[in-house]
Every structure is written in structure tokens, then in C-alpha cells.
Image (cartoon, rainbow, N blue to C red; front, side, top):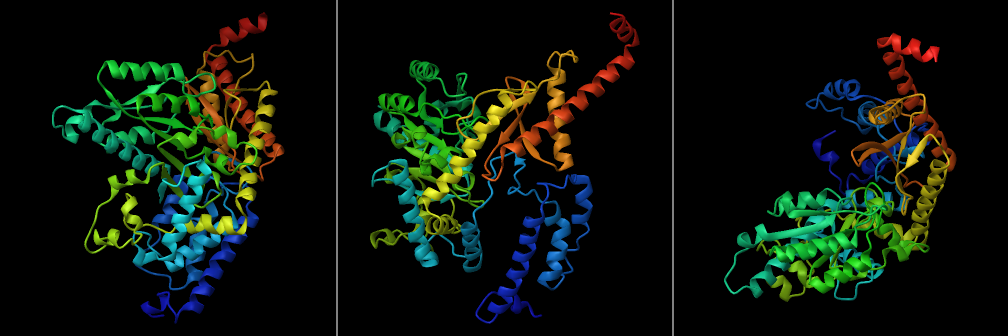
Length: 510
């Protein structure tokens, strides 16, 4: 075939249809036949297969490429749709969104300017408007789709920085430049917030030391008394709080900071409030739990990740602002792209609001989902996974083999296996047993769970985002974890006894 025969156009439409059909059939077969979420392949096992591919010698046909893809990717991919995938904030995806993804790839719109996207621009704007209404913002709100929560948080904090610098300059008796103001800026956020807040501070020229960590209560929510104290300390030290970042759904615990009380403090002190609802945004479409997000409508900016809680393929995220005028801080004009005169002509160029220039039409996935399923049906799926987390908590709370850190508000649980009384432990054995159990479980491919550290100790974590996961699946995974952890504890006890036979003899005599 000639090189031009691979270009998607009017003459190759049939070739396009056949190629995608091959791919869809191959993936459908993998989804239907996946008996476990992972094969357990190691990097050392898979790397030689990938390295052996000669990229200078094309295979020529889609079928041959898919056969090769089976060996280098599809066979060993981690399948999030499997009910025993319980690790990270990766959701199974809904079919209307996958259909949207196929359309996006084929048409290949770029959402930076009207003359590259037309209807796509209006669809994205309509979805931003819809999301803003769900948050509780009024008609002055706006926003933009982004690549993910980290970019959304970065853009929100950039806007907060610029607004804060503007106010500092306005209230200063001397002419101050932004570089002069930056060293005195601070961001306050909870000790359980996402690491992207610190990363954003570095990218914005503030440095990690500008992020002040606010202690959390026993439910892993930001403590209002500690936030109040830190705000007062910053004022005494003549440090300017550029933003308070509240979290609506922390990555580890799913905890939701007390948004109304935080909003009260920010309103009183004139501080920008950003709510990172990358995970908790699923509550926006919940018919049973929307009240958990009360107060989010008082934020200056909000991060939402549709690819976490709306069952969308990666990537699909957005940052929303209460006042669209603040988006001017990311507006730059280029004569070849979005000249200033286009504003006067009321041409809707989305690049005027975005950190990105070329940008995918990711909004179409959510549009197709809402038009096929509707928001209520999507919200019910999110409610189901929250219900499932409650089921898992009851199982863990009743199981003496495990301890749980907090009862879940959303769909994550942090817990750990406890070796029995027959295994003396200063904490090290428990840590190592849980680390071993997670690694052994992953290597088996039977299930996948995440891990984290709480108060310096190692824990395991369930992230439940699949409505198809049943209590029986959770019980099975708990038994697998316990078996691996107990195996490790017994191995350690045998090694200890072999190294200290006299201690063993004394114990037997007793």
C-alpha cells in the first residue's frame, strides 16, 4: 500500500472502517476474556519483548500490528474494568464516552480556536456552563477543559497568584513587581491534600516552602482551628496568603474538608478559595449525597476530574472559576492564531482561557455520555461505588485480621493486616507484611490494591470505582491479602527461630 493510502479521507473511509473494526474486535475479546485484572508480568520479563520490535521495519497491515500489540501491550495491560482492580483512581469507562473518543480521534479537532473546532467550541462551553450550574456558580462563571487535576490545580493557583499580586500592588504605597511579591506569598492546604499543590507552587516560582500544611482531624479533614491559627500567624508575619486549597475527596481517604467553614474564613480574610474536587466531583451528579459538597459554590475556583468520578476515559478534566474575568491572566494573543481583534468580533477562541494551545476535544466524551445516559444514571453509578465502600468498611471493621484508619465518606478505604499474637512486632513486621502482601498480590495478577503511608506506617488501600465490584470480590481480595501477609509473617518467624534456637527451646519449655 502507498503511504497516502493510510491517510484518513474520503478515499480511505472503507479502510478506516475495517481497521477500527479489527481493533474493536480485538479489545472486545480481551475485555470479555479477562479472568483477572493483570497477568503479573514483571518489567524484566516484558521489556525484552518491547525492545525487540524493530521500528524501522513496518508490518504493513492493521491485523499484523494488532497481533504484535497483543504481545507488547494488550496481553499484559492492567484492566480497570475487572471487579478486583481496587488500586488507584482509575475508573471503568462508559460506552458512550468511548464512542466519543473514537469520533475525537478521527475528526481530530483542536479546541484552541473557533476556526479549528466550530461546534466543538460551543459543546465545550455548554458543558462548562452545565458543570458550573451543578457547582452552584451563577452566570458570571466560566472554565476550561484540561488534561487532569494537576493542570487544573496549577491553572487555578496561577489565577490566584495573579489576583493576589494585583491586590498587593494596589494596596502598596510603593511600586512592587511580581518577583518582589512572590517570596511573601503562601498557600494553605491540608496535610492530606494532593501533591500537585506543592508542584504548582514550584512551577509558579514560589518554591515548596510556600505551601503550609494544615493538620487534619481524626477523619482526615482540615482542622478549622489550625487554619484560623495559620491565617493569623501569616498576618502577623506579614506573609500574604495567596490561596487556601480545600480538598473535596482526598486521594487516600476520600475525606472532604469542611467547605462552609473554610469559605467563611476565606471570605472574612479576602483570600482566594480553591476547591480540589478532582475525586469528589462525582457528588455533583449524586441524587443521594450532593449535600456533602455544600459550600463548594463559594469557591473562587474548582477542579473537577470527569475521568475519575464520571466514568470517562483519560483525559477529561476541567477548572471552573466563579468570575470569568479572572481567566484573563492566561490570555495571550498571537496574530496568526487569536489576534486581539477577534475579541472585538466576539469570536469564541478557547485558547484565551487555557494554559494549552493545541488541545483535544475531550469534552465530546462527556457530551456523548450525558446525551445517551443522562446525569442521573451516571450519578447512580457513583453512588453505587460509594455504597460498595461502605460494604467494604463493614467487612473490614468486623474482621479481626485488619484495622481501618477511617470510615469512608467516598469510595476509598485505608487499612492494614495485623499479624496475630503469635508474631511479636514492634511495627516493623506489620509494615513489611503489608508491603509483601501488596507486591505478592500484584505479581499474582489475581487482584490489585494500592498502598500508602499513614503516620509513618505502611497501609493498604482500596479505591472502589467499579459498580461491578461486589462484596464477594472484596472478601476474596481480603482473604488473598491475609494469606500473603501471614505467609510472610510465618517465614520471618521461622528465620528468627532458626537464628535463635535457644529462644525457641525456652519458649517450647514454657
